[in-house]
Image (cartoon, rainbow, N blue to C red; front, side, top):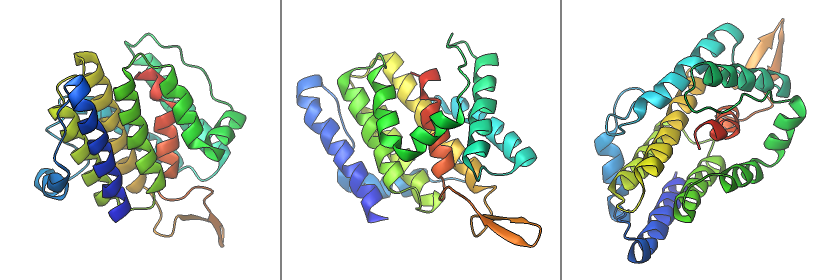
Length: 231
């Protein structure tokens, strides 16, 4: 999808413009498609990301949840999913973040304006403005292209990760934070895609019940709601 990689190009240009001021090196926009195809591999993993285990763990929790409960089709379903993974994050967590149960009203607010939820969450992060802006643009591109095929979303994320790995002015903690979050996003999208019904619907008796969420929307909401655990 052209808009997706145009978004990546804009992000990389933004970082490139910051490089003169902050010393950040960006990936050449002309190399994006080549880079994506080069690193493509089976499954959601990206061996080039040194923090891939962070996402692998998140993806396993989601996969386990989907195998028992199926994909989230309603606000009630997504609330239960978010709280299930939130509890896992807290139990397995060394981040020291408290697990706050999310209400259905809270999920409804996030669904109605996901970009606002994202902006508010990133505003509280102890990251540089460059890092925050980069993450914001990364997620906005995914939100706006959430109906793209997973393979394209994967290529986009991996190419973005390559740009982050090439940057020279991010602190070690910022590098770990961003690459951990991108890894979580890759695995979350893969987990949802692997359990989606072909027509994004479920059967109840003889009736087809449409999902409230589009392709990959529920997983993006879940990741964004859980960002506070990683920031």
